[in-house]
Length: 399
Length: 172
Image (cartoon, rainbow over all chains, first blue to last red; front, side, top):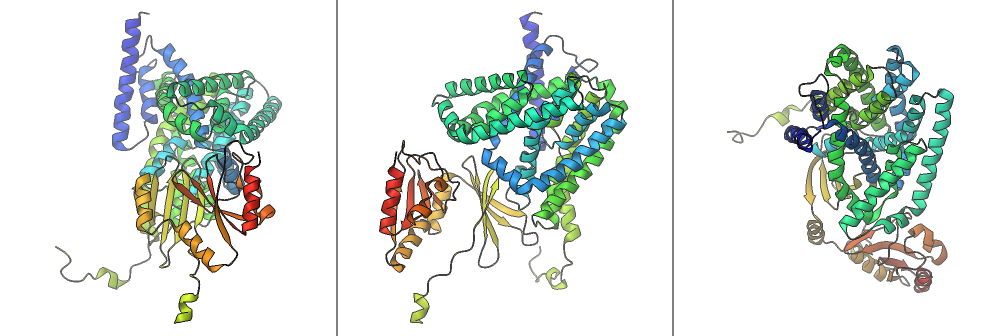
């Protein structure tokens, strides 16, 4: 491979992502489904198969998951995590039971075995924090009364993922349920120890890491994150979880600067991650599984709406707010893909990749659309009939 | 009529504080006329002043984005510096009550610990009613509030209690 063709190919890929991201911002949607579609087009059997850039994108994809999870951990402080667990545990449990079960059952019914079921359950369980955070901001719902419960559910999902990923890794390595349980214990133990440590020493750690020079800070934080991710992978806790925990441990000025410094890196490599997942899926394999993915999308949209609706009602939110909470949570995205990628790498049924790609393509687009239309629809349905006097306008105000 | 003016002002509306994980904190209260008003402190430093729908009191109707200097201007226009103002009034109305501003010095025992850790109320009977950090006041800090070097604590108590708290804060 000559450097020239490699550069031209990589440049073309990144440029087309830029065009897609521009399109997504124009329409006000998440670029994730578009990146996935681009990956499908660039992969084998796609429109423009890549020759030389795939290796680089593969490495970029690995960094992408790590950075996604690191930035996610950075979003939350230990206090926010523990408080969410304390106040919203029932909402978190309802969310888990209602949204993990359909995927688990579907996986088993499709004949993918228990491991396939656990993978598909994870895919249908995790809402997309990225898509939803943007959605809440775009729709002006940040200050709404139902929003704290939406955010708390997302926090609990993320925290559970830190326990789920190591278990999944153990299961796909070929362990049985006993091995899965053992690694569940190890993972839960490791995660709790690190959470306790970072509650005690997080601020000291952050002070030590902090440096006024952006360059020093960027290199230190990126280096620490990668090293911890690697160690976590080595002890079978999963690289993504290691990165997540580093993000949680950072606080104060170091975290504030890290958010600004690493966000561009995250955007670049996360894009590579979505493209790479698309690359590995043969577009021709999607139409046969489209009905399955669509059915799963419909069922798990309904279950997300139910768990969100119930959780909002629990904290005394009114009718319209309950529907908003439910609809906001429908979108699936980055974490479903991350889980699917682990499943594909672990050799679960060949249909997993296409099903996950189609499922996320559907819900990353449909979730925000449903959230946008549900409020006006519910407003019309729940509005009390207006008194006649209110419709009689004084003369002269019109025209 | 004369007695009417001597009566202390009724307490202000109860401000509810709701953490928004990953976003910041929402403070909201219901005005005397029954409208809900909220301020969202985004972690990025951005502030949002939010009004709610009449038909659907859970839903934000409109919001104004405030940069840091805008918030200060708004607070001044609304008769801000409320904490200091209320404190002076309180001091005048309760005999024997003292108010003082105590610094948190870097390297002392409680820099980097929480207000709860100082056990100020149990040990000295004085209350930390506000923390001034940089230009920003943090009124009614909770026990989880983390004290940082160069914070100034606004403390209410007996003169003796405040002196005791000063000693505690200076302990290495």
